[in-house]
Image 1 (cartoon, rainbow, N blue to C red):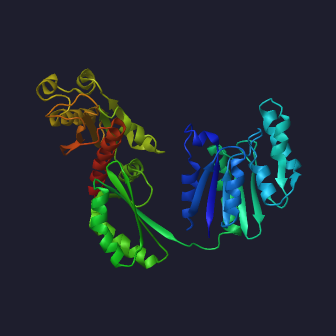
Image 2: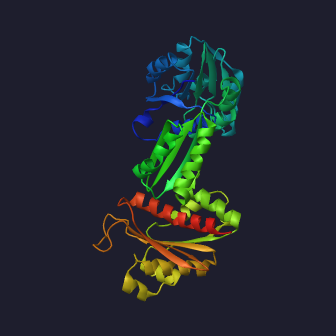
Image 3: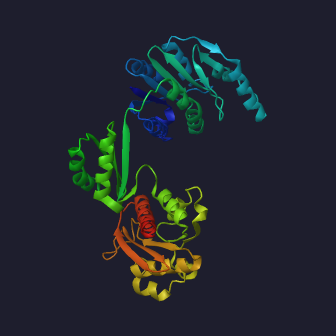
Length: 407
């Protein structure tokens, strides 16, 4: 099945907003074995005409986002009806929904809102619970065109609750392809490829992909042969072992929180160079309060001394970015929080502040439990954002490995 996506929105092409629709729809479709073959972004207005005309010649499913609002540049509905040779019909049920939505806000719909109640003949309309623009599913000859609103909150709800179920029932017949993915930390993309690709090719896999991110790689294989995928999992797991932290799209923080919950362990953080980013990531996970109660951002030396009881002599002798300092920070956080494991991080994120002995990118990470305290040194990215991401990932990975080592 050939699936194409057309995203409309001048703001996307100007760089004012990020196009999140493609990633969302691609993941949703691939979850049942289908993938998007082509995507194009066009500005608001007449740009949709040429894009849709081209897609109608080759696609089985066309998904268009945006351009369903009430303003003059929202003409996706009208152009779609024209190119599909459909007349527009007024649907009172949609108009009632729009009026009621305005009334709840003590407002009156404008005349232009009437356009949103117009539906191409033969189309199925999708009620918008988060806005005024209904979505549309339009069968046309051998294909289907789906129109979805542009605002992400409106699109995701409508897709999940109405459009996707309709497509699964009426268009998608069976799973065509299956994917397996492994997230591997601490090994470069080329090294992963060199180590694993010959082994995967040998069992007959032909579609192997890599996605490099800061300090890690996503390894992906796609096949319709489930036996090949099972063999691939055995080979990859044996090759990379503990470096694999996720078997899908789960984040490190989701993995860590789930493990800590399962083993009933508490985590504390003491952060300098990451500025609270580790705590931020943990608190992105629903239910993290059951495992994360204490976190310190001790950016200044005075904060380390006051909050974590770090001896000033340690800072004087070894400096803030040192093994001795992070060990003391981790021990202080463990003592103050009474957690089962604590993390401490201190480093030089740059672009200034480095020395010959401690260059920009230097990072010390320590972990403390009631049984032991240990630390590792890393030389990370000299870009501040990547530095914080990599440092937090390595810090959480240390917790993951410790949790996995428990009975």
